[in-house]
Image (cartoon, rainbow, N blue to C red; front, side, top):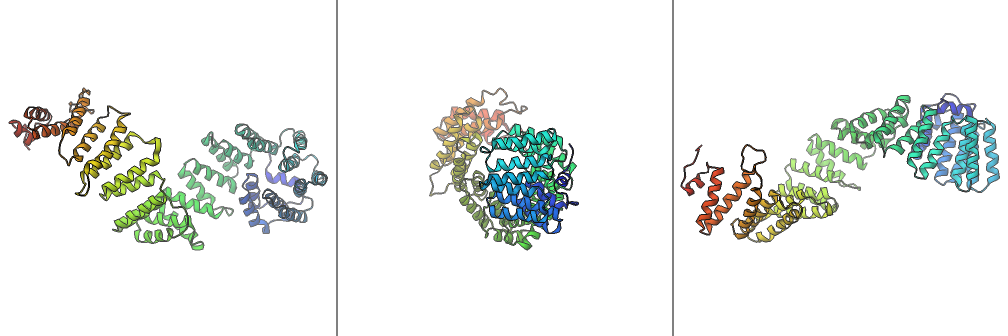
Length: 547
């Protein structure tokens, strides 16, 4: 049974004439369970439609009131609908549901009979009545729900799409998502233009197969290219599925629809920004801010777009305004503002912004990592190491070997640059603790062993001692397990690690007057690098090639 919502309504409200697009969009939003959006559009269009259309609009407005628990407003809207067109069955159903909720069962039954009197075999009205009982009390009125659903099935020969929509909704209430999706698909089968079925199917199926859910909405959009609901839902699903370019393009089309919402235009600005379309994103932000100067999101987009366009003086002014508003600031907000200040030659102010962000987002791993990186870039190595400690603390059990290696590197830099008021070994021990923890899972990692040796070296004021020597000897033992370790043509060679270890051990043994071992390690170094003049001289050899 192929038919559109408009033709369905024609059967129920005899005096209806051609429907306005906005009016239909409001109904579609209602049936897709987007009640606030439906109310907005219905009210936006109610002054420019026919009495029959007003009658149906008032029904949906009353139904929204019922869902919000405002019975008085619901009755007023249903009464207005009756006044606009007394032959429209919808408002009788609405008043009947209101009576059910008020305990007036007999009155409700009379109103339902009146609704059916306009077309005794109209299956959609039977489904609406079943839904009214369900909304009032799905347990108490199980018998009545089954009665009216069975009537709808019989009168439509199982081809009424609203039957399957209602069955799907009941299954969704029971968290039976897969079965519900199947019902919504049945509704689409019997009404190829059933936007309600498409949208509810996509919402139910999106978590299981997002690409297929998007495909169904693309089908709906192809069938109803001017439908605000179809346009918006497709744009939203592109967005949720991380299809940024398609989401941006679809939003661009959708906001040309007179029934778009202001917040959708704001979303479009965001999508344009992430698609690196900064000028049009900025233009939308400026347009919306002209009417709402304290709009938090649009002030963010103003700052972000100006920063991306390197209009840094303007971006700085926009950031000052933005951070003066109340709202949740993201790590990207702080980083962007800091970068702007750095470009303006104000690095200390940039660091202060990152510090403020790390304070506000104390449990945000990314923000704390950024703080550490910022300190490191400013050569505040000990601060960088301590910030990295905080970053790793947020990761809990998810700390990786790479994280620990980097943390040890932070302390290596801090120990190597320690001033006279600091104890470099105390600093280095923090890095060694990170290395030792990483070695528990990667005992044969040469990078970790080398870093441990380096930490022992800088902790001793860059002077070799027995502990550092032992660490380098252990590193060499591991390197010797690699058959390609000294093969310069192999991509897996460890020549740089070997040279560092041989050099430091040669220096160590020479320093303690153990000439035999000093010659041993300097000779091993010379085999790998005969061009080193200092080593060649120590060994009494010629430099192989002088440059």
